Image (cartoon, rainbow, N blue to C red; front, side):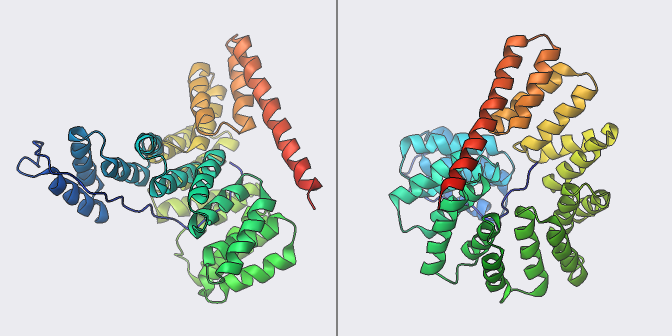
Length: 382
């Protein structure tokens, strides 16, 4: 999986909307009115008790199918429990009833952003900005999606405006530094990132610099900063994972040990399992890679890369139909990744499905042409 712009984690807000009082009979809620069930579920969500919260909001929705608050909160729960497809479906359902609800749109955009569906994220955040041009958060997230999808110039312009309006916005300032790096302006990037780290503790400062250099494919610099982070704080959250990813990008053997340390640090980290699985798959250590990739998929069903590498492993094991199914799932999650369609075309051709194989290969050419045109337009801009 290619380097992507890493943003600080963003917690989707709880949607709270008024309810009419409706009697309800459901397991655990027999004596409660619908507003009471909703409030009980909202408190459970705030406390991180997602199972109770989901049951409560689903009860509300079963009895009041048009209840936007229940839909919005179920979307939050699905997102936080790594069920992105269900979250997207629920937010879309709510938006059919309230198409201009900015909170729902923001939450939907966040799911798209986490899933690396940058076109959908841009479209969603664009709508929020059109509804509320002064919404700095939406403008920042739109710029993040633009950065991650190669639209450097518009992202840079937006981030410069955000920084001018609010110099204390650390998130926008960090993204601005990344944008300068991606736009081949290292001096401005260094000055901007120095502003980010002036008030940050040393470990965090080095971690942020490592992220910025990683996103700009300056892997030696990234590795140096991640190493310094771990020297200062050997337990710094995410540092082993990011260092392992950096080593993996450089094809260095140290990647495996760092990624194993990341899993020890956080056994439920889907990314750590995915990257270690991908690392082992690249070495044809399929017996070790496949369980890791399957576990990554179970932890985060929306992680398209896990499906991609599982498919490559199944192709090597001559399980062609399974590989085709996995690649089709990956393509549905990330329709702009040429490598998925290339492997899908190869797999379909092996099964004699020539027309479908040709269509997949045509999609590869289409994506590459679109990328080339995007790069040419960027070069033509002053």
